[in-house]
Length: 507
Ligand code: FE
Ligand code: CA
Image 1 (spheres, rainbow, N blue to C red):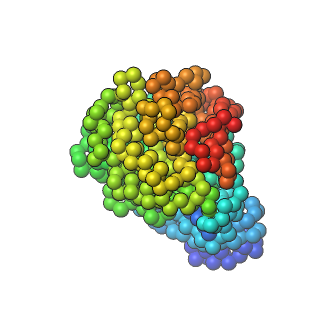
Image 2: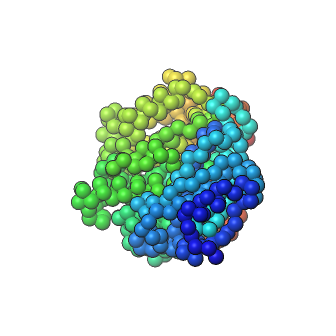
Image 3: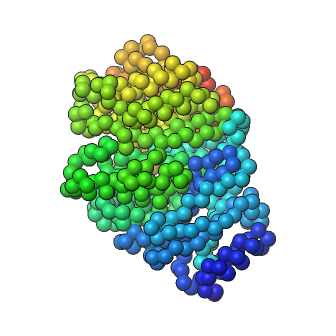
């Protein structure tokens, strides 16, 4: 065993890495630090973001994972083969105590539409190996894209079998639409328990991410493919809206709440494979962004929490005419315009809008709906749908999480007219674990009032899509149980969306 020595280590490691490969010559000074796995995200045609965070004892109450209060250099390698005999990019990045020893490497110089392996090393310890890929060149409609998406992974409600099964599909790209973690304190009726009470401080959020990320199934999903991540509410606090909380539990002053929100987003950035553009600036974090997959698809990733008007009549299921005020917006005016501008560019065949809350209208006999979802902001939804129709967007597909149920919905300019044309498609993923084992019934709640809602499932699961120039094939993947480990996944229902024909069809 050699002592960890920065200068010798870096010179020796990087100079010879390509020729000799890396050994696991572990230092006695640092216990194995890669307990949270590795991840990659936000691919470009020439690169991708690589992520890891050092935490030898990840569950420490201070959120620092057992790391000393000093900076540590971390080497990284990208190779075309699993044995790292063909290393094509490599370097060293510094992990800072102030950043909870997370690292975000923005790799460039890679080939477009190409699969790569990556790993890290520090203190003689080797990280697990991740697989990732670059996007196709902007003007190229390449081969078919296998994209899977999911949301809502309450740690106490179930095991992460859904993440494992998603990884086993070997997707090219994974979208996570929020509720990656939950802020609540330790419960008593789950299959496992959160550490501590409701998370409020930076240390709390950091430790909660660490607890979630110690899960082997979650690590497998991150290691399998690049992810595009956007948070929902629970990464901060349930149903919050911009600077307004849904309740005052725990009791916080306005200033304490502002600090909590900032800390939550700081920890989010630290723990996700995001580019530097998403580095928080004070209380704000810029998370809405576009990721282009060549000429095939453009992913418009929305943030529906930071800029929204407050829920109009509270955030439950309500009949609330004031919600229709055209001055109200869910993404906020700036983001709404940014979305419409991006849709209007029609870069790819498919315009995929990755966001959080239920988009299609869903009302009951009394016209009540979910005030936390787009039904609480119908004018905002109207502007977006009409906007894409006016801009000639051929294949808008909205992806949604949040509701812990799977849905397939046809989107319409006029939801009250059954004869009105379908102008888009919404696919809603169920949860990874939130809600527990689920149920068999596929009856559509209030179906008589919402004929554009075509499928509903109460099982846990994810959505798997195969995107080609002519169609998007959609499989609703489900597992029967999450309260025991190891359930098999199966396809409960499949649809296709044909290019140029919005809405779901039977295959
Ligand atoms: Fe959720
Ligand atoms: Ca949510």
